[in-house]
Amino acid sequence: MELMIIFIAAVFTHNMALTYFLGMCPFIAVSGDLRTAWGMSMAVTFVMTLASAVTWPLYHKLLVPYNVEYLQYVVFILVIAALVQIVEMVIERSSPILYNSMGVFLPLITVNCAILGVTLFMIVRKYTYIESLIYSVGSGIGWGVAILAMAAIREKLRFANVPEGLKGPGITMIIAGLMAMGFMGFAGMLNVQ
Amino acid sequence: MKEKAIKEKIMMVLVLVAVSIASSLMLAGINDFSYDMIKMNKERKLKVAVLSALEIPLGNREPEKVFSSSIKRITTPEGPIYLSTDDRQKGVAFSAKGSGFWGPIIVMVGVDPETLTIKGVEILQQEETPGLGARIEEDRFRNQFKGKSMDTPIRMMIKGAKPGPNDVEAVAGATLSSKFMEEIINEKSKPFIEAVRRLDLD
Amino acid sequence: MTDQKDSLITIFTRGIIKDNPTFRMALGICSTLAVTNKVANSIAMSLGTTFVIVCSSLSISLMRSFIPRRVRMPIYTIIIATFVVFVDIYLKAFHPDISKQIGPYVGLIITNCIIMGRAESFASGNGPIRAGLDALGVGAGYTVSLLALASIREPLGFGTYLGYTVLGDWWEPWLFMVMPPGAFFVLGVYIWVLRSILPVSDKP
Image 1 (cartoon, rainbow over the protein chains, first blue to last red):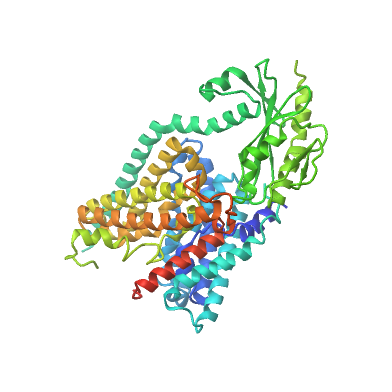
Image 2: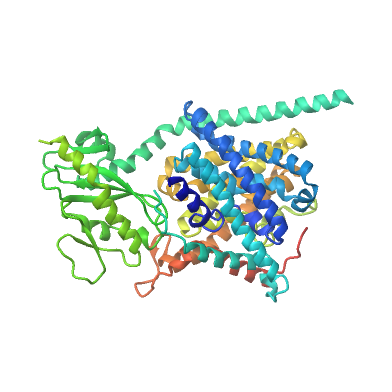
C-alpha cells in the first residue's frame, strides 16, 4: 500500500516536470515530436531507475558511515554521468534510428535535473531501497507522461496560428501551465506521509 | 602512434583523478570548518519549537542554553518526549506526524501533564500550498489550540460558525490541511498522551 | 564559435538581454520556476548560481589547456559540483531558513544547463578575463530573469514583496501565481513579450 501511494504520488500529484519543474530543458527542447519524446522518456525512466538503484547504496552504505554526506552531489552527478554514457552506447548499438532522432539530447540527460532531483529527493524523504526504486520508476513515468502529453499537444498545434513571439518555448510554457493546473487536481487524494 | 594514444589515456586518467582529489580536499576543508554550525542550525529549530510549545520564554538567551537547562529528553517506544524541568512551567512536548495535502506534516505539541490541556502547537515541517494550507503555520491558527483539552476531540469549525469550547477555526480555503491538522492533534497524538500518562510524572 | 573581436563590454552585456539565458534561450528553467514564488529565495538562488557560473568558468578557462577533450564533461561536472557544494554548505551554515526553503534546488544548480553551456561553449575556448566577464553577464541575466518573475509572482500571490506587505488588505492574494501553473504562465508571457520586441533567429 505504501509503495502504491509512493508510485501514484510520483506519477501524478508530485509530477517531476509539472510540480517540481525538473527536467525542463529537454521537456521544452524534445517535446516537438512525439517519437523523440517517447525515446527520451524511456531513456530518462531507465537512467533514473538505474541512478537511484546505484546512488542509494552508495549514499547509505558509503557516504553516511564515513560521514562524508557533503560529497553526495559530486558522487551522484558522476554516477549519473557514467550511466548516461552507458545508455548512450547501448542505444547507439541497438537502435541507430532512435539514436539519430535523439541526437544531441542524449548527453543532455546528464544535465537533466529530473534525474539528479530524484536521487536527492529520495535521500531527503528518507525512502528505503525498495521505496526509492518504486519512486524513481514512478517519477520517470510521470515525467514521460508529461512530455508525451506535451508532444502530442504540440503536434496538434503545428499548424495552429500561434502569435509569432509565442512560438516555441513561449507556447510550450503556457501549455505546461495548463497541464500543471490539471495535475494539481490530483493533489490531496493521497495520504502522503 | 600507439604510444601517443596510451600517453593520452594516462593523461586523461591523471587529470580526472587530480581534479577529483582537489575537489574532495577543498570540500573536506570547508565541511570541517562549517560542520558544527550546520549541526547547531539543524538542532536549533527543534529546540526552539520545544521551548515555544512549552511556553518557556526565551528572552535574549541562547535557545541551546535554555534548552539544556530546562528540558529533559526521555526516549519512549513512541518516540522522544521532552519534559520541562522548570517547576513553574510544567509540561511535556512531543512531535506527532501525519499526512498533509502535499507531504507529511510534523507538529510539536506541548501539553500540561496534569490537566492534559494544550500549552502550545508548533509546526516542525509542512509542505502545504503556500498561502492556503501553509497558513497552519501562522500564529493566529496555532494559538487557538492553547488551553484546549486533549481528552475530548478538537474539532475544526468554518469561519463564522459558533465555536464550542473545544473547537478551532479552520484555515479558510484549506479544508483538507485543516482536517489533516485535526487528525494529527486528535489521533496521532494519542499514543504520546498514553506514554505521558505511563511516565507518571510527579 | 565566438567572434574574437567582441569587446569585453559586449561579452558582459549580451548575457543580460540579447542572450538572456532564461527568456531568450529557454535554458535553466527548472530552478527559475521553482524558486521564484518568493523574492528572497530568488535572490539567494541567483547569487548562488552566479557564484557557481563565475567560479566554474574561471577555473575551466584557467585549466582549459590541461583538460583532455574526451573527459572534459566529467571534469566540468566535478568542478561545477564542487562550487555548488560550497553554496549549499554556506547557505546551511549562515542562512538555514533559506536553505530549508529552496532545499534540493541548490543541489540542482549542478544540472543547470546554463552553467554547463557556458563552460562548453565559451570558457573552454577563452581566457580567464573574457570567460569571467561572460559568466558574470550570464549570471546577471539569470538574476534579472529570476527577479523579474519573482517580482510579479510574490506581490500577486501573497501581496508581499521580500516579505513586506505591499498590497493592502483589499488585495485578495491570487494564490494561483505562487503555485506551479502560475510560474509557467508568467514565464510564458515574459518570453512572448521579449520575443515580440526582439525577435530571435532560431539558432541550430
